[in-house]
Image (tube, rainbow, N blue to C red; front, side):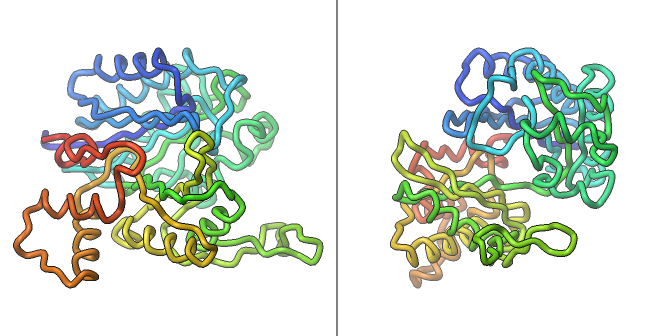
Length: 346
């Protein structure tokens, strides 16, 4: 393909095979689109889907899977550990080859217009497609989540960019955006102490830690916003999540610019903050796909720290170094042919 766009829709369903099959089938009906993977997580009650293709077919596939979500997922019955406000919660478009971030922002707008008019669903634009500065940050767009959406839709300042300013109980709303390649990255810790893990997450994420007032409640500034002590890592979002079936917790992270904060940097900072609290990091996992570049960066860092050379190693050997260093198969097997985007689309 001369032009390749990646689309990574996140759905608020983590365990129903019938929903997964319907999503995959909808993608595969579109000529010019390649389905790369579907990764459900029952603990988060969320599934991350990845497909790539030429710009127009990718938008068509995105609209079709939104229709599937509208039909198959009922948000009135949905609960989960991950922030969400819609059945198809976020739908980002990512430049891979022959397209720019600006091109992907246009695709997000085309998608939003179609979903709003054809499906009658509220659509908000975020990141590089945002219609106004305060909507660039997904966390602000999704603040209050599904449970607060009905009241927010009554406010003029919260009118969606496309579709009706009306609450659609079964679906909620969808955020469509354009962004640099985001690495969804979870780091595993050998504890069930969620409070301690949230302390770790707050210490490393860019937003940081809330300042507490004398009464123990979060302090606010003159504009009513929470006062924060900034965290260590730029372009990093993070929360602590309890995984009861594994009797452990994760720091669940979105690394929104891996050239500035790479996975190995986040891994080391989480390990440092966890150790201060007597907690051990056991490994990590990539949710969805990852470019090869941050894995090569991790391998080079690990080999440098161990005083070993990289010059004589093949690309795949370096990937294996990164895999072992980051413990990428701590939870699920990490298959380089399905998890690394350059290998998956060869």
